[in-house]
Length: 219
Image 1 (cartoon, rainbow, N blue to C red):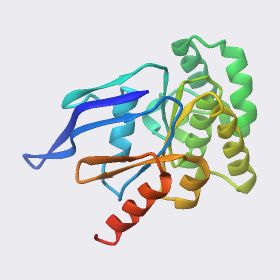
Image 2: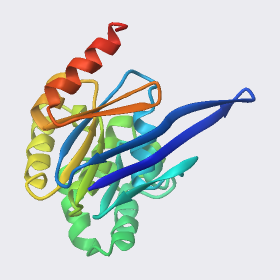
Image 3: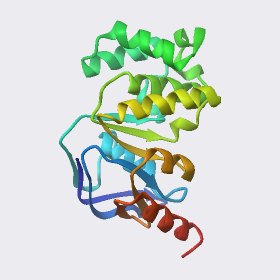
């Protein structure tokens, strides 16, 4: 379960404070697969990073009763001067996972070849997402935070990623940020729409999609 209590986040731009999240109170149930929807710039990635604990709220709090992954797809999760393999070992130590087993899993899953032993800063955005998704799927979290990551790679890799995610979802929840409505329908059972700092949660994913599309049309 992930609970938001009077959650606020604002940034100062050109001397003005701009709220991104404004007094949000909501709850994502344990094991729910939530599609996080909203237009570009609505604050979806910011909310994801606050759930993970990599960004601090301006006020309010986020409570959880289980382990939460780092935001997959967020480049800041890894050290740019370490190789992909070294980053995997570092993450394994942080989460108390056997490093050799995680290294073998990610090397096979991410399909980076020789680039696995090159500095992370040399990776393309797609390679970074492959590494991040592989590391995340290699660790048994209670909730996975995913940011457009299933759109990375060719059709075979996307299919493999989706299949493995579904296997993890048998025992875990997901907060999934995506602009692909078909992917949201395929993966998620609930939806949350972020608009003008407000978060609207729907147990029915189709109701959330309908509100999101209405917002995009200017409704």
